[in-house]
Length: 115
Image (cartoon, rainbow, N blue to C red; front, side, top):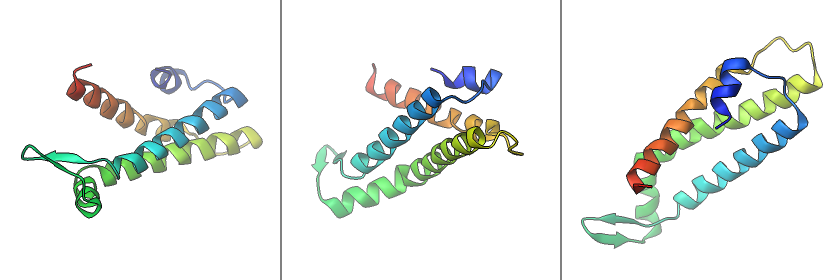
């Protein structure tokens, strides 16, 4: 919910925002690890063999999750660095814009679950 606000107005980074961002990075990292170990249905049959689950996950979501997590962690690190060094020459806005992809993925997942 805060992503559109952050992308539009680029508010100053605060300790509270950094804590929230760190928590979100940890959450999505754990979600990725759980997804790697979650069975799936194939032809109406539940597949629970780890090697098949990992192959299925690698073909479908691994690259997307890795790229998104890299951007999330990079954004967090840049936010912390920019707070520590006020004269930082880079902006975190491009990295934050890439988080929009995470938002679209979450929306797609909610639609798939019909929530």
